[in-house]
Amino acid sequence: MKKKRHSLESIMRILRASETGRSISDLCREHEITEQTFYRWRRKYADMELSDMRKLKEVQEENRRLKALVADQALNIEVLKEVNSKKW
Image (tube, rainbow, N blue to C red):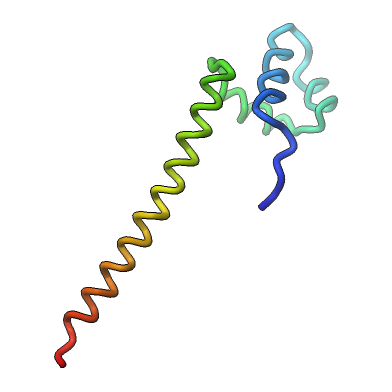
């Protein structure tokens, strides 16, 4: 998996720096991100505090884990149904 370059703290710092009046293109150049990445972060984390960002990441990770669990369960159910439908 690709390593992330920016932590939640650095993302928050970059977003706060944009509120001080600095140009977005200068910020993006300084932190080596694209403007598209900046705007995606701003849309996603606009009104959040750092603690809210951490909770969001935890919830997203839990949802990913639960979706994988449900997919495995559904696959197991399908296999069992197929085995039970055959005549012995």
